[in-house]
Length: 309
Image 1 (cartoon, helix red, strand yellow):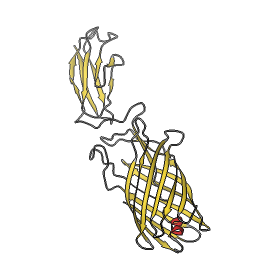
Image 2 (cartoon, one colour; image 1 turned 90 degrees about the vertical axis):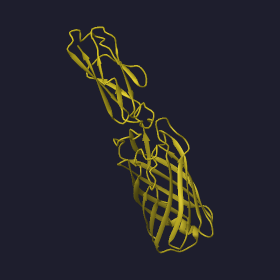
Image 3 (cartoon, one colour; image 1 turned 90 degrees about the horizontal axis):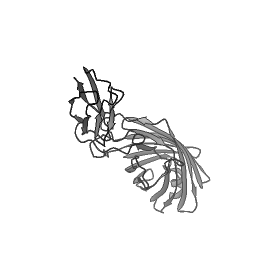
Image 4 (tube, helix red, strand yellow; image 1 turned 45 degrees about the vertical axis):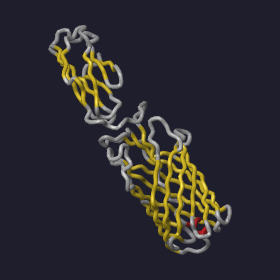
């Protein structure tokens, strides 16, 4: 649900807005609570019933992290029934690490973006917006489209729907999509045609564009399948040029990372297996232990102990 309110006056219009996702749209559904909410405000001024300029700021909370942006834009009347619209936004804040259990993403951030589009207004007040956007211009360059249709139920209340989706995808970056029911209420001095009202009302409502991505060099992880485990959990190795001890990881959320408290000897075999070998013959005298740890994509760990008799 997207809720909006406009206070309209000839000098400066105030726009307040808030949103809440009613659907947990994680993948798979229910694995991670990715419901999000956000709010913002914008100021706009309409000049000679022919153009409107606006500036605003808003935030989104997603996976317990806040992402914000600031933006400016405008709309210009090109006929009695059409507007040209455009805006540019700058993400605020640094990349944030996701630590929530079972999250598919290593980090999120609010990206810069630009968009350009048009608005068509019918004589009965039915308003349709369609825009093309580009996320992180000069960087990721993820393009998409967004649209909105609204109808004035009364002079003050409008109902509608809006939505958007990325047209391009990048490796390791989650695809953005959104779909909302909107309810807008306007008060203050209102006069003129439906086109005049379209200039004044809630077009400045824009939320941050959130980029969700895997860790550097990794692709978006597959969903967890059971708890992370390692097999075997204990091994005996004679040390001093003996054979390798091989371990297999399963469950959790791939990909896996392997570490050991011994500086040498760990080698990754494939996506799920690694081996430890006393390559430097550090343990010829025996009486030692080596701890092997496997860590999955979201930070869960499993441990095996190698005993050197």
